[in-house]
Image (cartoon, rainbow, N blue to C red; front, side):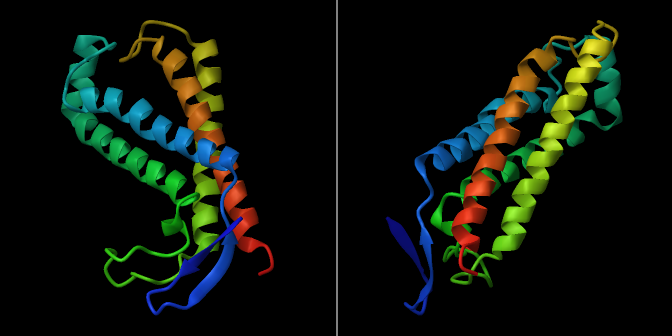
Length: 178
């Protein structure tokens, strides 16, 4: 089964196979991990609520820019979720009609795949670093509870691996024969 990306002029842009079910699942798992897994807890912290944090240390950290930092991280997580979905949705092949100046144009596939692979590598390297840090320094001295990585590490693994799997599928589907 294949799908055909149609440009606004009505001509076929490229014949690209539909993503396999496992790639769609990986992309959605990655997007959910980025949004439903990452954003809610970070949004709570961004609003100044010291959930699973030491109140005094949190307030000091928050006062010197912790809130805006967490809002930016949440925005980046949302973008990463959109990136994951773009690897298995038609708008990963052609910009949708509502995008100014880009509507109907082909998405630069190398750029999209490269961004997905780069983000997934960063997430996986960060996950390994966080796991090593947690094992080496499991103490209650920091701003946040030392148990936060128990939640965060599996969530980042799903996010990073799902993104890498979806990116690999996207690369195979869109670069074959080019």
